[in-house]
Every structure is written in C-alpha cells, then in structure tokens.
Image (cartoon, rainbow, N blue to C red; front, side, top):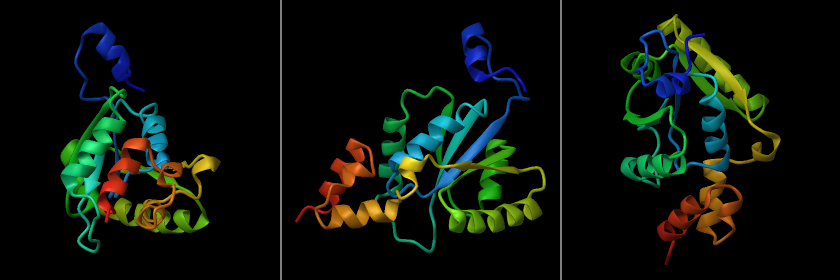
Length: 177
C-alpha cells in the first residue's frame, strides 16, 4: 500500500495520487456512536477518508445538511485524514468525484449485509473499479441506529446511550417543547 497520510504529513510531503481514497457515505441523521467508531476504524484502512453526507430524496431529515456536516466535523476533529463533503445523486458518482476507489460500509446484522451486498453489486456494475469494504460494527453498537436515537430523544429518553453528547444535546433542542 502507498505511504500512509500520517507518514506523508510527518515528512512534510503532500499526498501522492496513488494514495488510497475511500468514502464512507450515509445520511448521518444524526451521527451515532456506531458511525463515529466506524469512521475512526476506516481511517486506519485508507490514506484519505471522505465522509459523504448524502441528501436522500426519499427521506426528510431531522437535521439540515449543514447541521450534519458540523456535527461530523466536530466529532471527528481529532482524525487528520478525513474530509467531510455533501452530495446528492448516486454514491458511485460521488466516489468518482473525490477519486475514491474504496467504499466503506458498516454492517450491523445479516439484514444490513443483505441490503449492503445488493448495493455493492449494483455499484460494481456502475463503477467496476470501486471496491466495497464491509466493516462489521462492534458488538456494543450492533443495536444502534439513527432512527432509534431520534425515537428515544423524541420521547425524552437517554439518547446519549446511542449518540455522542453533542448529538444528544442537539436532539434535545430539536424535540424541545
């Protein structure tokens, strides 16, 4: 594998074109403990991880795109080899636009795997040089989802069990009477 970005930064040299660029795309509405763990682990696998915050036409997000970008940037501020961008449309087109050859997908269960495998096959059909890497969630996050975090927060529950503290505070503000 090409030199890591950490090595490049220490040597004062810029990234080489051959460095591995990966994407981790999702809606992140809101970002959870599971998302942040996967992002941190994914940064060890690529030289640059571009976090793509997608605008899904089929979903009405709770947080605006700008709010989700700000949350991810804040939560990942200590990670040096990431970039956060927004996109709409096909994930393969986003991958092409940032020069990514790897798409990292988190998998919590067999149900996730089935869905993600079908998406990986479709993405491979559309962009054969984009490889999908499935990263299993840690067991302590296997039940965590953005949907559950929003539902718990909506009813005044302890959302901080599923999301980092800044996100829990933002959820409380969203659902304040």
